[in-house]
Amino acid sequence: MEDHAKIGMKTLAIAGCIGHIGTTTQAIQATMALQKMGKSCYMEMNRTEYLERLVMLYSNAQDEREKVIYSNIELYKRNFGKIISANKYDYVVKDFGSADLESFEEASFSGQKTKIVVCGSKPNEIFKTQEILRNPIYDDAYFIFSFVPEDERVSIASLMAERAEKTFFAEITTDPFLLTSDSVKMFNKILMMERQ
Image (cartoon, rainbow, N blue to C red; front, side, top):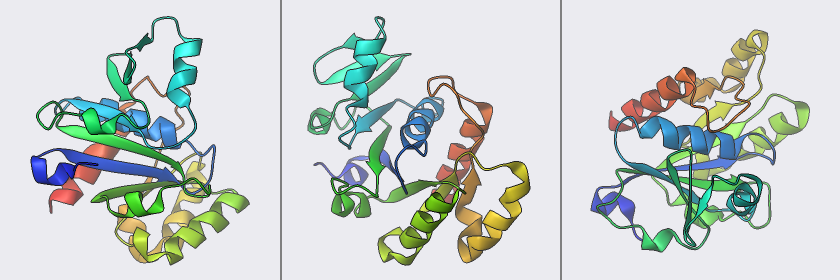
């Protein structure tokens, strides 16, 4: 796959510590938030077939073979990322899915400049998060915690220790295609930190 960093495109790679943690929701929110700063697209880098199911469920989702257009977002299907033109997008958001699956493309994810891991505070999620924190490929990653009640956030930030500065808490998002103001602030902050 092309090295987008060399050709001026900024990529964000997003993975979840476990399945059903909101990885795709955060990837779509990131894509929509980045559209406010330039042209962005979503790239499916996992095997969930989310885009195939999106087309099956919503009659207004346009299936254009290599990509789906829905809610004014261009979403590229798995294996079609190579066709993205160097000049077409300012931002590409890559949804790697769950890092807990055997099919997770760890080598590809580890090679991305801006890495984001979606985590949670339930017991199974915390233990998977701790596994990720011990893995050096995530040393420079940002962490977004989903579904964490307000009163647990201070203890989670404390658990993250020196990574607390790169830890964020997502508000509950019931529809991934409805951009929240919190998502805009969160992804803007991540990009600003990347520029420092």
